[in-house]
Image (cartoon, rainbow, N blue to C red; front, side, top):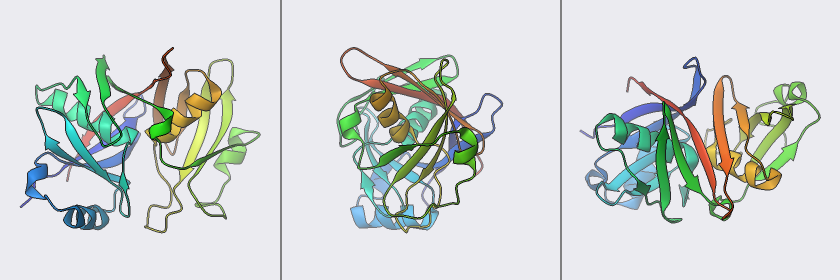
Length: 221
């Protein structure tokens, strides 16, 4: 038996929403990449994260069909989980590089770079209503992050995410990497309202790094 923690990452202030995440704390229990890919596909969550070295924070991230060098919601979720277990990490190490971690109240933050985000396209719409009216998924190919200003002066964005990989994930409820990319493109901190009830917070830094933060809840497996 493999112990799997199931979390919802980037929940709204009321605990709603959040993107489902599977965490395998004992990555050594599934050492093979093919076996990890098979488990991620079987679980069917947007992402599954394997903790390979708890002391160093080394992690491996899989969607149901691809392995990722960096992703926001697995790292935020894992950071929150480790803190809940009394082991708050300062650094996590996905393949892309060292990710700084910090906590601010009930929000877990991770810090990354736009160049770590795998290929995806952001597309601005005229209104939040237009984003809400999109079919899931919209016609076309490739990763699409559809967004519109909900309150531009306040930096509030309405967004929906469509991986369009053909792996069963029709719409991503909350996507930290895409929010990081959009923050890089806009050059400002954002408050992203994604999916049916999720919230992703971002902050920019002079060195070009961007923080992505959110609330996490535990679900039954």
